[in-house]
Image (cartoon, rainbow over the protein chains, first blue to last red):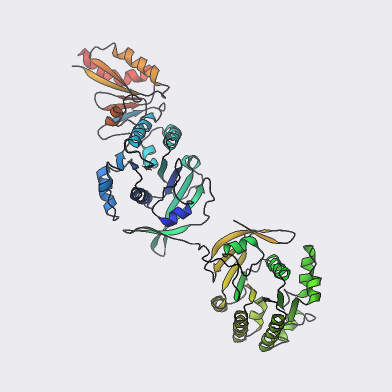
Length: 467
Length: 88
């Protein structure tokens, strides 16, 4: 049975809640809210009738109980029943110390175990180990014998939470990070003259930790965590992309009638993504219309499929794939620009609509592919936006799917913003430091996801999404 | 007047038996000093009362604490003040 932290989003981040026998560290810079978070977790446990032992190394118990009230919580009804607040430090007031390096922490272990027995505590909070260790002249000895403390307390079946100060820049993981089962990291940063608090879980044993950092605020109502990644809200089984993990992340797939905008940077080859989905839709028996251009044309597609040891010719012969040539490839790119285009925007749309109707008569649903980057540069702005809007309208009306590839570095921000408004799903596929990432920034299913690593394969499916 | 020196030990402390021996030896030289050995495994409440964290801890009558094991010379040096007190 897990103990809820009383903060729903935090429970999600640590895989459901605090586990018995586990030790968690709340790490953070000064003022980030370590103590406050541990107090809110204490309150959360108390509300579930879970006895808590709160050990403070800095603050007197009375002071702490008053401090808690400023956050709209009241510890008083629980004190000495299901809550014990204890101050434990090496140097009690009015004493002087002489220290050597030959000691262990059996004193505090015995005391804490006794307190645990007194109230049957299931959760022990130790705030903070940094202040505790600071009192030792031989800090290394204290840290190494603290292992015994963690072991003895967690062996009792208790959940142990330690708070620890972290430096602003930390190159090495500190001792406690190796020893504990989970690390909850909080930090505050100054942005636009505002202090912004962020929370993440960089380490979690027995479960996959969340890979992203969330923003949180502390108020009288408690701690509110704002999720930076949204889980899928509905499961759609209608249209899948052929990339298993992508479908999962999108909540099952792509709804019919969706315009999918795939934003790529100039350095990323989108063909693996394009061919994998194309192959999947052809296997499903769909009709595919490709608005071809200098990048996305029949010869290259056939060639690339051959390289992946896949024969596409049967589909071409059956007429499942139709190319609409906007530009004549017997001329150079420069000449193509001079000639503007061989078809007007309206021609393109009407031909596409006719083809869609033809597929519909053959009871085939339609998938549309296009590389918009050149269009955006060759056509006038109004022509281009008209083309995209009309195409999107047709796609939505006929319950088809359109995949539009676009180099987001090559077009103006205004146009990109307008395309983004029209698109139902926006997927960003880009390269950072020789790694490719895929990310969903907008989705009609409500499922967005943060950058995930993309793995390329030699054979279909040509890409996999990791994580 | 008897002065009490408190010595906190635990079963896991490997330096404690030696220090206990040293303390007994030193204190036997001064009749006004008394040694109280407290094993925290038997008496946690005492450890609580005196806020014991690390073991071994020696509490001297002036509220000074010696934390950690050491050799006889070191302990004798720390106790010197109370040893000479008795001679006056």
